[in-house]
Amino acid sequence: MLALIYFSILSVIAVGSALCVLLSRHPLYGALSLVVSMVSLAGIYGLLGSPFVGVVQIMVYAGAIMMLLTIVIMVLNGARDSKTPMFDRVSLFVFPSVILLALLLGFALISTPLAFSPETWRGSVALTSATLFNTDANGPGYFLLFEAIGLLLLSAMIAAVLLAKKNLGSKESEETKEVQ
Amino acid sequence: MELQASYIQIVALLLFAIGISVTLTRRNVFFVLMGVELALNAVNLSFIGFAKTLPATASVAGQILPLFTIAVAAAEACIGLAIVIMIFKSQESADIDNYSNMKG
Image (cartoon, rainbow over all chains, first blue to last red; front, side, top):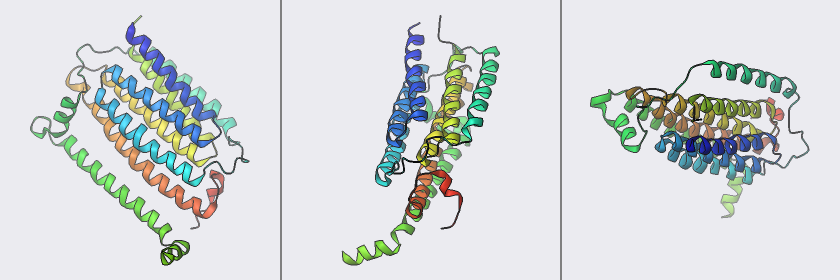
């Protein structure tokens, strides 16, 4: 009963702030309500018994990714052309089709028998690290995935640096470098 | 009245629908990126909700995969924002309809 109350509060906050993302005009307000949505999703993860994913959600999503997005919005002044309409003209077709699809999937979900398993494992730090790094017991699958994620993050970082370096090598930045 | 496993999937479905709508209908490029993040979050929630319906060993995979999804989302946001910065320098506009030409 208590879990249902907590879940209702957190999910109302998550869905409501997601609606704020849909309806807000300034990108900064959208980013801040997205942070609220992600933090309440982390609360739902903790409630369901996966505290490690919840902490990673707060640290990486609400912390790092949204911080990056907020900084880029503030640096680039992403709302400078407030004359353009908020919604595309294609949204006349997108909204009904998304609502129809959601109703269809919701009907399928309600009619599917789903129940919590009583002996499910709690996704703690110990279980996560044992699954990822204990290759004798679990095979090398998760460990290889972990290494591949490391390579992916490294290549993403290099690509971002290269993309930004192209800006740094432009004419104006070279002039400022000479001034310094 | 207890917490049912299908409630979590309903919330994930709502978040995914809102994320897809934000991505497809908004014109500001930052809202498009935020909609993608929202949809990825909904998929993570769905993973965790389904993992909790499985017994002991089978419930681990659904709680490990969101970590990888979050890492991929971090890489995606990094590259996406770098591309947006590059386009912003040449276009001076946040309207995604102005980005239709791929000229550098």
